[in-house]
Length: 392
View 1 (cartoon, rainbow, N blue to C red):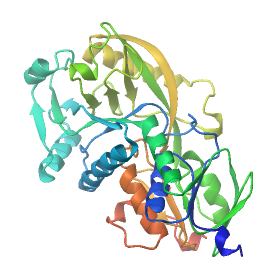
View 2 (view 1 turned 180 degrees about the vertical axis):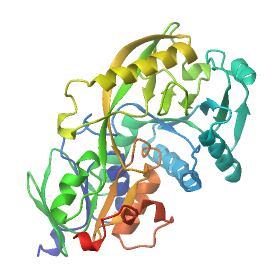
View 3 (view 1 turned 90 degrees about the vertical axis):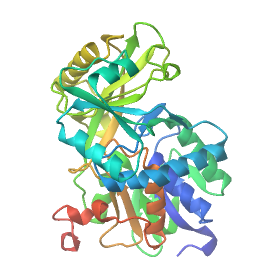
């Protein structure tokens, strides 16, 4: 066994937003923590890069809306500590057919949870946001607390905070082997580390680390097209014009959600994306595009043409991002079924960034054997058949 001075309280694998917030909570509670990242930071190989993400309370599920209350508080706290803006309130506009069941469910959740919101008819929406055009039968629902997170700034702020609090951040160190035990041993391309607990937040690489430990989660890695569209008049969809983030639900031309953020990342360009993609190997993320990539971009182009008339419906910039999806779209936050000092955070399904302050807190609590702050029933891996102890 390693000498006590070489023994960490926790090792976190993966320095995306979930791993960073987990290490941040550990370091804040004076735990000796090391955060290992296989790529050199910053990088664009995973799910947490880029300049912006949507933050919202608008969810069909009460438990996410409830978790978001604490998330907003922790984001504000990190912003104060970092001394840099990480969040901007713009509102989130949900678009859908009046009878859309998901839209109705979200409205009911917002009402139950006391979140300020407003239902907008086509006429009211036209007055409020004249550069949004609705199709017949579509309405708007405005979550006034919605807005933007500045993703790249948030990652830097967290990594700086971890170091300031005494934690270690080691990038360019790929994990080659995990040896369970007390302590658990992690061997990277550089050296070996030992710790009382291990937290795996490795995104698309999760199952590569879990297979030698006897389990495989039903995770699907999708390559997402991050699409930018040119404004006919620069700034017309910008934050300075009070344009909100938006989410299109169950629209006739799109089987999956379409979402957008006010222009600002690139001058004169607005991010409008399809919340879906193609299966991808994370090691070959930049392989040639599939036919369905082209089809997805055509869906977006029609949406832009029909709903955002002050954008050019021709794609201006295409970037890539990875989602790691679970079958039900909910996260995995749980102990390994055999090794209770190994904790797994996975399957954030393209909507985990905003929730990462609370996810990191939960993973910290699980790793320290503390009572979780939230009911973890929706996030247990036992909800997937064939992953119990008999599998091991």
